Length: 203
View 1: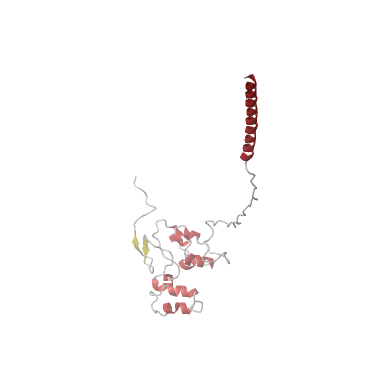
View 2: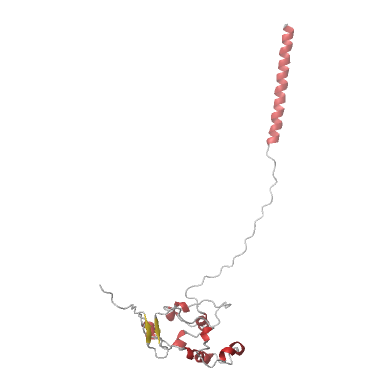
């Protein structure tokens, strides 16, 4: 029996050795399999950003650009004195077009010093234009030789200047809402909201 026992012990030892060796091989195979795959790196492509051309910001003192104009072609009229109250004309097409031609508000409406100095705004401008006087005044500079007759034919055909007013088509050279209205021929105040800036407040 002792031979059998020895044989059994040897058999068990051999089996253990075989098992240990087999396990080590499996562990090594698994370790090899678990290694992360080698990733070939793609070359990094840096996208070029489009070049941005920075434009200078417009300053409040700069006259607004009109249509396709990119820069002034000569002296520009300074209407800042008028725009203190009439800021709506700072970008109005008719006013801007004339300013670019160095024709100021004063050249059509007079210096209007009393009007500018009146904080209650009851003093009219020096020169105002009733409807029938607008076309004849504009034609003083924009003579029939200088305008496109074909475009203006229907307007010029109307004998009554009240019906063919230049500012009906050119610009928006009028206030949308008026708190004061004057008779444009006499300068008499005909509509007034009675608000006064210079009245002393009651205590």
